[in-house]
Length: 392
Ligand SMILES: *Cc1c(COP(=O)(O)O)cnc(C)c1O
Image (cartoon, rainbow, N blue to C red; front, side):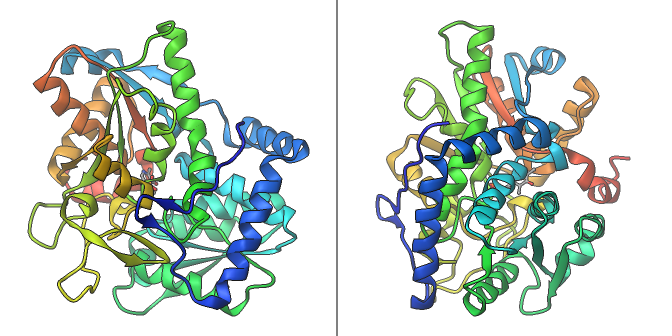
């Protein structure tokens, strides 16, 4: 694995908008991270965990029947096949090893749909670390099976009753806990968001998706590259992870896909399309906010995309034009979900279905292209939504 670069600013975006009491923690974290990724023993331990616990490398799968149906060549990066079922485990395992190395025995994390909570609880169980997961009370009700999985891994799930009772509140509570217990606590953030150095750390641990995908593509097509790479964007960690493998290859088009919800005003999660820059959760980035700077409500059928912010590097990539950010609505994502399920025998997560839906749209416009779609997770967790929508 390459040496980590710790970026604090992506153009004007990023930074460390935190209470002064947390600055010592951020500095301590950055120093520990840099030391870890330069230490051969750490790299060996990390590599072992990725191979034997996470299940890497994940395949790059040629979806043959889907390709025929959509009129191009679709390759799926199969993060759905990782342990616990989504790319989140890459970051959780990496950061849990950093925490252990720092001598922190108490891990706090936030979770929306519960995927990051489950991944963190699993990574902590494996290392014998205490784990407290903050989760909005509404999300706890909507995502019971994930709450139960976390508890089975020995984690404590703290339901947050304040305000919107969702992810935004859970992050507030996790940060509050960290501020109150800075010495013994490690805050294990789940996406490429938050104050520096988190966006760079999360990118580092997710960039294995892109480096594997690039190498695997070139075993199919020596020295060639795909026409485009597509990933869904919530906070932006799976997208930056796969883009990292292709950012320098300017001929490869990169598309980040945001959730358009049901398309009604105030019912979307298109932070980059509809938002304006502002400060949330320690970082300056695009945000969904009203004229007074208050964060507005979001919606998506995919709980992992239902977040009013986005990682600062994506804000810079939008402004530079290197990545195009597109919108897919709930219905389109559900159609793509059904098509992949029936044509390939793979149930994608509803989040990943947004990326798939955009691939279909792209091939309709310009057929014959070779695409890599990041299948960020599996859809088993979405069963209740799929039943409610009449798909079964
Ligand atoms: C959490 C999640 C996402 C969105 O998070 P990013 O940080 O934007 O990657 C996407 N897909 C799945 C399956 C998730 O669990």
